[in-house]
Image (tube, rainbow, N blue to C red):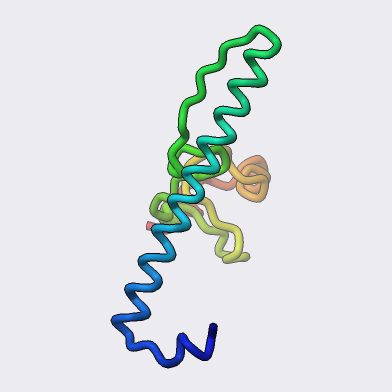
Length: 110
């Protein structure tokens, strides 16, 4: 098969890929339908009626929303790895320095 692929033009390869992707989507959809029917049949066999809702990939469990990185507002001049955006809980390194009598403003970047 790979020998035949090398003989195809770019247009023919693109058409083949598109066709293969459509066939794959169709098979996956058919498989989903079969599984849903089996689940409903099993539920009915024990006296339950189930309603299944399709979850889009964006809303699926485990997916996270990617946002922009928040700029650093506070940095320890003695250790540049210690930095904080000002959001969430104060980091331990900053809390300890403030407890020692230092001011939060001393660590402000801007």
